[in-house]
Length: 305
Figure (cartoon, rainbow, N blue to C red):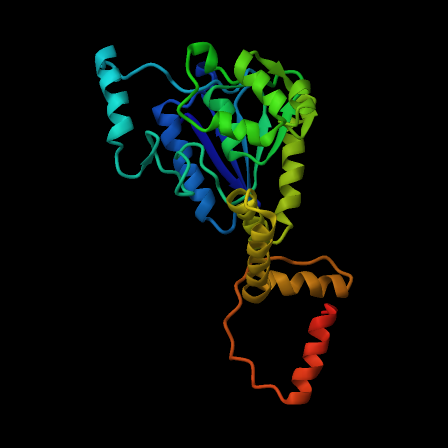
């Protein structure tokens, strides 16, 4: 199997496991990781994931660029042109739609935290999956290397890599990466804000797991909705995004047990126990007397509740 997928103590471990082939996203690896993303999305016992590669040379070296046997250059040209004008149902820009319904199936946006443990080269599609599917990134000081790896081939790429890069780091740094297509190391990735931390290679998984274990203790519905809010609505005008955030927050308070558990644990000075349970809808509020309505209105206007 070119992909290892394991689940332990609320954490999913996704390991690209074909080091002899640079952990590339060939057809088999792409299909396997698509299934892993789906399971991660649907398994409510899993609260976050760690994505890494086997070995110390490659996190993911890109896509398999070779066509299947028997496909000629003329065939490829025709099919690539057809894909523009007559895409297949359930695809986005030539890729099967991912679990989020928008991005490609092998690097989708999953509404659970994904931690990248960058153990080696992240190039081409490996660079894309880092940008599209991971939220927190820890890099190996000795072995992590990064390269857009498409401009030098005369491409801008089929995926959203350039767009995501310019939104995640400073414009000048992003444009240097895209226009020169030069490789860079972990310390440079840290300087420009592409990764969160750089650690010795021997501590890479230990650090990623420490972050994951902390996330597992967090309220799962709130964490999930926070990620979805930032990705879906983070670029809206502030007043509109604020309104969406307020509505999502009200849902968490009213429809999940975690919202009440967090406040109760704070008041009782104990650690909260977040289980992500949903609350059963109850009866409607009784009609208030004039005095009760006035009392609650005064509290409401004070904001002290």
